[in-house]
Image (cartoon, rainbow, N blue to C red):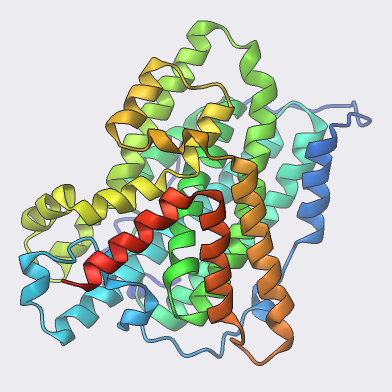
Length: 385
């Protein structure tokens, strides 16, 4: 992607992170763990080509309200929003679409690098097999989001400072489990929740399809992280487990702050400090941030990293209720939604996408009724303003 498409100057076109990783070869080729190998089989079978599966002839209006509910623009409902005319709101929608999809793209490059590193550093062969399929997945996701930004949004943003700080820590750490925890569980878990907002509530067909297929892949990646780490973490000392829990708390605060989007406000001529103050106090944004952790909390609990500091952090963030959600059910719903979309591909381009959106919200509501109710209530409240 040319740097000309970026909304803000890019201070460098390459970013180097120094780290010392131990490369592990394993000659035990007959190792077998059924669930990991099952994921590996899915990883092989579910490869898809972004150029042929997605309808890239779809016209996208990046300033349209149809790209996502205005209620999910962080300053929606503020005095600044109310003062805007429709032209200014179209500009803001365009920049928010560019900013959000740019962070998806940059996160996918981080995932590509981390998956390749896991292949290099994870000690067992089964995990190397699966991680190799993920490398291909992440390359495809990068290609897809890059093309969407270049051809449809025609604008991009550099990497957000909070995402960059977290990626720096995850990539620089030499321990394979920390790479796995940071990327597969935390960053990918947050991304799944963010992707689902577009899949479930956007009326732009290309974005809905794109995110549905990406989520099908990402659900496998989070499942891989869980399987690999669930075997290791019971063997850790109390001090080692405490270090991982400290990292979870630190990473979750970074990811929560990532969605303030402070670099957008000043760039489009708004008062950055005023925007950030509103975003920090907005009930809508609190609900949005809360939903972003619906994938992370149950997975962290499943891994046994649920000590007092982690529980307190999740309580303070208002997301502790997600501890009772079953991660396997969420992954199954993501898989079914993507399969349903694939079954509908026999019709005209875009056919059935509206029905798929309804199926998506119904499937997720069956798993987590409180989350679905909060989403609907928040949108209804916002639309009444």
